[in-house]
Amino acid sequence: MKKYFFIFLVVLVANAYGQSDFPISNAIWNVQINFRDVLYAAGGDTLINDTTYSKLLIIQDTIIDERISDTYLFGFIRNEGEKVLLKPINVYGDVKEIVLYDFSKTIGDTIWHNASTSGEDNYTVFCADNESEKYISIITNKYIEDGLEKYDVLTGLYNNNGFYENIDTWIRGVGSLRGLLQHLWYPPMCDSFYDNNLMCLKYNDTVKYFNDPRCSKCFCRYDTSEIPNENADESINVYPNPACNSVAIDIEKEYTDLTVEIIDETGRVVYSRNDLENPISLDNFVTGIYFVRLQVDGDVTTKKIVVE
Image (tube, rainbow, N blue to C red; front, side):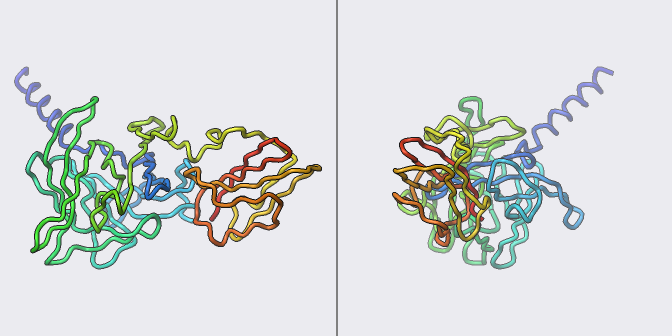
């Protein structure tokens, strides 16, 4: 009996280590892409050709909304053993499934990703590998740091002329420190071309990874409490919200001095006037979260709006 129990225990342990703990449901990655925050979210099962995936979305707020009309459906993600696989929607060429990560690999092993990506945000395009060029990652080191299993990785394009590598770090159960997908971007990223960083991963309402020097919260750029001097002045109304082509401001009280600013998710002032312009055109605004800050006779009020 003891012998059988021991064998059963070994099988359980082997199975536990053979499965990826990468989150594919109720997870949000906050990635800084070229100084702009982008939220990727995984959640909501779907069945494709008898294979179960989770939806991978780009969301405009910190709530995972599985209604496709209110979010951007990016693709479908799943675990297979210790591999993390992505079935993208926006593709160029015959891209079936991309190997995002393979945490079964060890030092010296090569991961063949099957595709690379280019572009940014909602315009990311997945490009299939061809016979002369392959996108690969090579594990150069594997270690434990701060309780996290980390992999040092060289990743980039491999062809007949050599390997155009870029240095990266992966964390088991988290992903690349460049972001969920950004380690597959081509041309290879460098500080002068892209500035992509994983700021936070929140999984099952628990912060699993955090490295945002700009604030103390996982999604601070999506939280108006991070904007100083905010108050809830009910005499000021900003509408419509969400907005598309324009936004208007109503101030239901007399005033002599006014400053209007619109601030994007990174804290950059993208609009500023010392008088009231109605309506304010949003033609040059990208989709995302903005803050309308009004200084009325010395009192500051901030309103959060969504531009679609």
